[in-house]
Image (tube, rainbow, N blue to C red; front, side, top):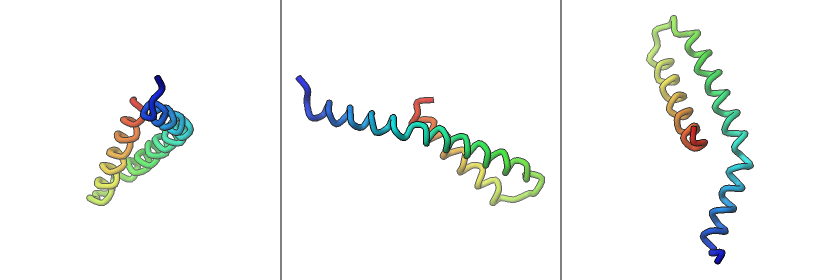
Length: 68
């Protein structure tokens, strides 16, 4: 028997699949941003360190959404 819960779960999975490529692209752009920030690591800056830490946290969360 098909329940409303199963229909809702299926619809959520379809919607997630539609945006999955956007999440992958976001992770790639975060990697690029982190790489650029590392190139400036010659500068001692707590702001740069904080930015890298925050970007790495966002990347981990996105990867968790993707199941990577």
